[in-house]
Image (cartoon, rainbow, N blue to C red; front, side, top):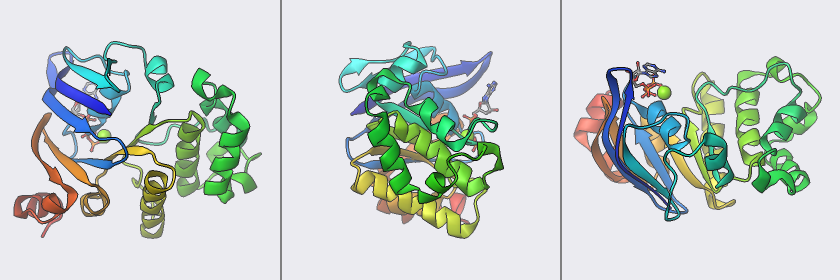
Length: 235
Ligand SMILES: Nc1ncnc2c1ncn2[C@@H]1O[C@H](COP(=O)(O)OP(=O)(O)OP(=O)(O)O)[C@@H](O)[C@H]1O
Ligand SMILES: [Mg+2]
């Protein structure tokens, strides 16, 4: 579905990604794990068209997408739930969701999308008139996911969705991602600090270290790899 080949990304003189290549199969959950500063968010932002790589190719359903503006990439069906949620705090829950359906691909299906999002997150329906900034952290994360879903993505990229949530909410967030994949048929790229849980969920995973892919395999293979266990799970 998505192919990333030989991506180099620089911030000024500092190289954040070096020769990064990966393939994202349709219908699967693919995890990208790595330590702080490894380049995970940079990779997501490059796929989303927010960062411009110096070299490499990104192909979505056979067409090159690198260099295209981010709204065009979103409109092809690549959605992202950014690190830190980035909702609009003074807008209501409903207004935040409506922002997500402004994409040309999603406009006509706004009512159906809203019904789906409220079905998935009944709490957002209860609070639809409330200012988004007054929601709890978990509710804000639901809103960020809901807003992305309003854009009708086929591939959805999550950047650390469990960050800052309580253990019970972290568990709920993983179940939601699993459900979006299994029931709604969404292809998922999952960036997580919660390495064990994300490898359990993922069919395939890549390990990013200082801007390079250093290992890849099935989620189960990496989960049982001694180096991964020592480096990321403290066991
Ligand atoms: N806008 C920026 N300008 C300059 N350097 C940046 C910028 N964003 C990220 N970097 C640097 O690029 C490298 C990769 O950062 P990135 O945020 O992609 O890592 P990450 O794996 O997402 O880390 P984290 O787990 O902390 O979210 C880091 O060294 C970081 O300091
Ligand atoms: Mg990050």
